[in-house]
Image (cartoon, rainbow, N blue to C red; front, top):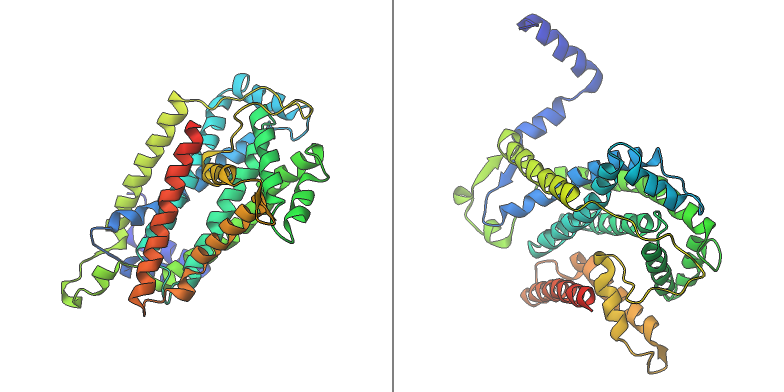
Length: 361
């Protein structure tokens, strides 16, 4: 309507000369997505990306009014919730978005694990994804303290006390995060800096690497699909077929986020008092609840070793076995493949059962 064919060609040529986008366009046009009964799990990577974008936008808006000082942090959140137009909406969007993003990342983690997407040549894809999960949990942990209310203060204190039990580096890391031996202004300032500066930079770098590796190797498929004769395998073009489906799923995920935000606005508890006793039944956020509940079951001493130290070591070794699964389940041994699947099932059941147990106890 506004441009003729000649003007459109000139405009495309102008962008091409400056952006060199032809390889990316070719990749999008020729990229194929395997079609099988587990294809639904492919959407959770995109959902995680969408919710991450929501976190960046809402986080920047919240920084306009949030004050990371002991005497002002809690009051600034109250002001955002009650006095700033749509402040309650943006904060609830950020809080619910954080929880849904971590949930989507966990689903993405387990779906890729059970599809054996960590095997050659995707070992680096898996390892970068594991690190992204760790960073997301880091966002959750550092952001939880920022409202400086009673629950977040004592939950952070418990988390730092537990992390200090990590052999060799635990005490040093906890000391650096606290900025001393007690949680105070130095802790709040450091958590704020890590949450809004350090982790986002690390996340963007690692996410760029992760996406680049995914594009280089394409989407993985389960064993049943790979063993299907080539002439019977079914694919769909990424663009526009899968891309349009992706957008539809994003809309559904966005609607869920908006419904939770509108019907269950995120509140805030009483302001933290470092000198008050911890409230009865204090618990961390749901994504740390399974580990917290597990540590509660361990006796004070396990042989000559302190109980919490034993529990942290046990969970650390277990997590390391999951992270390094590409090194010992290469697909050449059926026994190791079954062991990896069993390890994943046990991990998933552990997280669901212990989280539910911790929430009800």
